[in-house]
Image: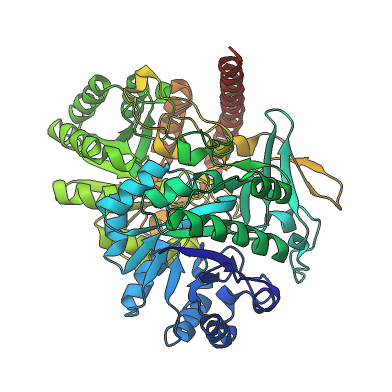
Length: 304
Length: 327
């Protein structure tokens, strides 16, 4: 009927989190190879993790590092080689060079194109489909209309983020470390564990910085539009939870699971005020969804 | 002899660049090339630029380096056929799907992969070669080490900006959509599009350079600091002889948004430098250092003015939107 997924960076998060609301998990943090226990960087953690996720009855996808430099490629190959014989349902790839590498390695695993793969057109979707990509995460700038067009005209499954901060930028170096005064030759002490914000008073702008990724300040929220998403026959939905707490992941999952279940069984969504209030309470800088409705990303469009 | 590729933000700039010795000029059609409308050309001006360049044995590349909307791919191919019929020598493109389509429609044309592709390693170059591209522009932050790796991993032609920066900060362009998250404007009549909303990545909606204005950065437990999000690149010189030796076939001056006089002087300078490297008369770049220092200073002044103008424009759209909402 539908699939609700989210991301889990490390074994610690997998053990501690409540993912009961989710049908699938994307393992790994694609933005930072140094993140503690990062599945995307630790081949030895993968076998146990995928078994654990599959034992929970969920699909399991492995995220590959999004912006590998040449010196990252050997370690990336080791992750891929360790993961290939394991029962991952797919690998998520952002980098087109890695897509080429996977083809030349003879990878037959289904692939998902991640958010930094810059998927804007059905023409590009056909190119990557030829490489074994079965699902695409459209660039967040695309409207819902455009995402649906790509789904229908490629054709290919599209992943629709429904909640969480929008990934806007990725970096090859860590912005937080660069501005923390830390000695770059010393081991990282993970100052990213604390929330960092970029704000600008003029224009009331806010962004969240997690070091190697900059996210929207506001949380994308499509709760009021779940019935429209179901009516459009979209089926793969995602909660972007990078840097969020276990409580956030569980609460958001619960709310969207309930809404999606109602929508896909033809029931009205009903009153959403309490759920919206709870989601807004979890969003320090408020809610947004403007890109889906052909506006600046930080705008919020509610149900008419 | 490596080619010098220069910007043609206007017909006047394209003519000046050709007159000063650029081998290739690149021009962007209104609404299709990641620059505001004042740095793009009408089709009439593009044709004039092609004719002017062709009459002097030079080339024009048309820049179609936005990420198009999926709804406008037919329009993009119509444009490609039109410019090809006028004698354009090739295209500068970002979207992989667009590259594949152009290669299919025009098997013999030359395709450059634009900087918007956001490549990070040598295998990216291999991907684009497999896709049918002929040349790829390498990021500012790549040095001779990365250039060597790219040439060993793929036989795609290599193009380098005449700018350098350090590997730091956000990857731009190609992996950044901050501008459109914060600010959007409608298409204007001048761009000839009225259907789709877009962004800096999609043409005609400016990147407001939000990374280059002061932001306050910090956590709840640290004192906030004021900073910019990205370091500026600077004009390059010392590396050029090595890069020519490594097989870089094309050097690019960016700057369709700069004044014509700035571009004219940059083309004149780099024509002189590249010719002296290419014919072996000069390998010590130190003799050009003073002249470059003056050009760098001028470039920084022009860039700051441009960023200021774009931010002011962004704030103006905010005011217009607020007024519209309350009217």
